[in-house]
Image (cartoon, rainbow, N blue to C red; front, side, top):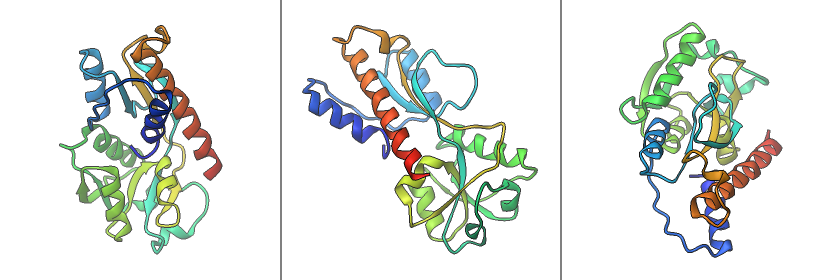
Length: 207
């Protein structure tokens, strides 16, 4: 909502397409089910690295990092951070019932680093997770793209390489992007892919 969607909506408005937009907040697995059931036309998800999805129109690497308040002791370092360094820190995370995908990946990252995270505080959206981090209540594992929104307010340390990777992807009904450019599904999927590419370039300049 804070990265690709605003630019996509501007593209739709500038093009003068007569479309009705209905936004729904859904985790990645819910989006994939809805796309396959014909209940959704376009999605933005984080499918991770694995077998390519038929629904993936475009994607960009968006590696995990550790977010913390500027006053936090780990904020003073530079370079990639071993997640083990945060083993004894309180974590802010998603409630599992709100986003099982993200909760499971956070726990998996920590287990891979040799510890079980102490998730002391929970929220239902990334912006609220980061708001709690800004209050000094703990640290959080989030995709690095959020640094573009909170630059100067929080510190984001990249994590050392892990087998669990993060990607941001445009998702659409399989084959939508290859459809005739006159079809609504095809042209919106193509516009979303262009906006993701544009966002990726902006993010690279900030790193």
